[in-house]
Length: 144
Ligand code: RB5
Image (cartoon, rainbow, N blue to C red; front, top):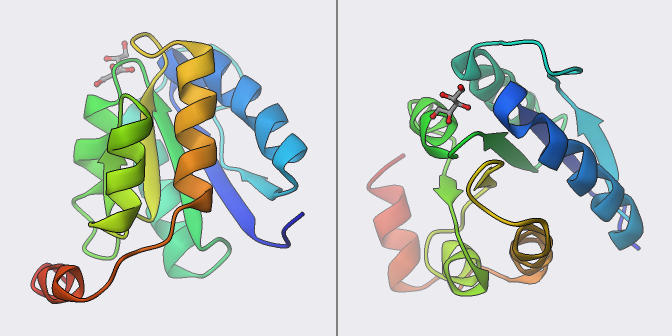
C-alpha cells in the first residue's frame, strides 16, 4: 500500500489502456487522479499532457502516467514543460532505466503499440524503482 497519488491521463488512443492501468494502480495500492479523457471521443493529446504538467506543478500528484496511441505525441508535448521528465518506455528495462538514470516523473505508454501485460509490467517497475542520483542528478539539473 502507498498513500502516493498517481495522476493518469490519455487521449482517445490511450483510453482503453488508461482504464486498465487505473485498475492496476488500485491493485498496487495507489490513489489515482484521473485527468481524462473520459471516453473514446477524439481529443487532442497536447491538452492531456498540459493537464498532467499542471497536476505535477501544483503537487496534486508527484508522478504520472500518460498514454496516447503511440506514446510519441503525448511525450513530446509533456516534455515541453521543464519540470516534466516524461519517458516513453516499451519494456521493463527502459522503464527501470527511466527511473535509475533519468528520475522520470511521468511514464508514457502507447495504447496501440504496447500490450497490456507489458504495460502493467512497465508501470509496476516505474513505480517501484528509485533514482540512482550521483552523476545522473547533475545531468537532470542541466535540463531544469
Ligand atoms: C491519435 O489518433 C494519435 O495520433 C495519438 O494518439 C498519438 O499516437 C500521437 O502521437
